[in-house]
Image 1 (tube, rainbow, N blue to C red):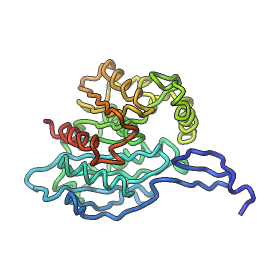
Image 2 (image 1 turned 90 degrees about the vertical axis):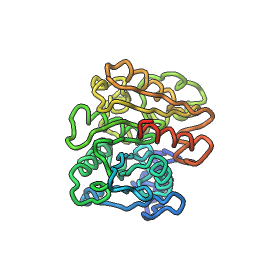
Image 3 (image 1 turned 45 degrees about the horizontal axis):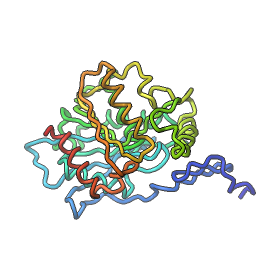
Image 4 (image 1 turned 135 degrees about the vertical axis):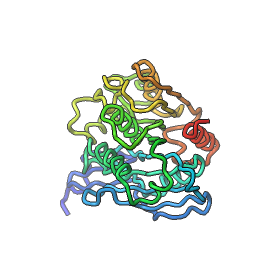
Length: 314
């Protein structure tokens, strides 16, 4: 082993460390749990390969005792992790999807896209679009064919996954994808950013996270010119009004560094000329993606119920 093997080139703790010898050490989201039938909710899951040659896959979820005579909404979910860590197969996201699928009574596809830095952006976006194309191309996947209504599709995601959900919805609106009718998008503490601070981003107690994001973004997307590229700063996107759905639900957390970006997203989307409804919910006393960590907590349960109501139209 080289003498400098423990020297750190990039330190993105608490997510990842990249050493000068080329080693990449992921610090969270490493556990992999098998698909199962959840004893608490009765939700069952299974894994599918979308493009095995490039290692793109997904975990599918089906609620307890689904009725073949009445198809259910389909939720396509994109996990968070700063584009660097986590997977559709870790315990945290399996637990979150169990709770969400049970509460909303939906079929879900949790997409396992490839991660930076080995696979820098825009690869995560291309993998996610590939998953959407796979969904509409299915003729043999029973859970999608027999139980999912592709006329009622929702995209959802937290943090970086919320960013992906937004960008996929925008691509649906500008490029179209025959076979999917996107009904709505759920963004949980979405990872948006910009070159110039807004709101409280410049406050002293947020200095760590501002510096962190300033370094993280060119690391996950080396080809980017600056932090105002449209994929990370929707305020700079001339196509924002083409978002391919009619309703959006945005969740932000009071203590989260990204809170003001989520609030700003609602503002700019409302003023963009987009013909839809956007609702913002701020959860007091909570931090980034609290409900993914604790979906059955005091504030997590009302959020699950709100998302279920948003999907089912009540």
